[in-house]
Length: 120
Image 1: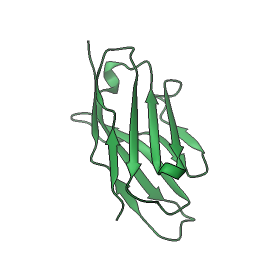
Image 2 (image 1 turned 60 degrees about the horizontal axis):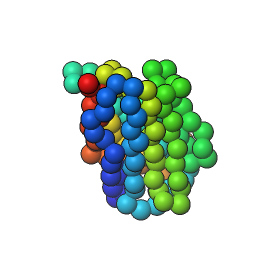
Image 3 (image 1 turned 90 degrees about the vertical axis):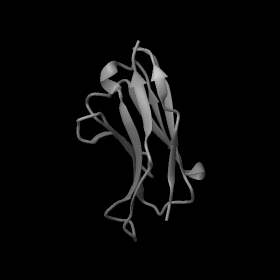
Image 4 (image 1 turned 180 degrees about the vertical axis):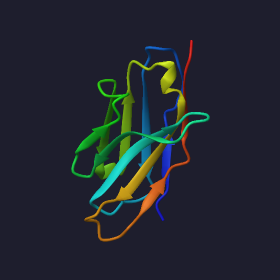
């Protein structure tokens, strides 16, 4: 079993920046997709951004141009650089690692979440 551990959340003022990190406890089968999801109180969990083991990225429209996802396969780590934060970005952010249709084994791992609060 792979554990995903997020870090980097916290309180930031509107317009500020934060970088989230998610480290896997061991190597993950490839190909895979790692990503960030978020859930605000009273709302469903939503996709923020994903990145494949080959480096292909995908973003929610609400964060395009403000957030950047990246990964370091050697460190089994995925990052989310968040700029121009606004109160609507306030949520618990969850890291995910999942298999693809071409992965030899199926998996879907989740981290415990890290809170991001954007407030003045």
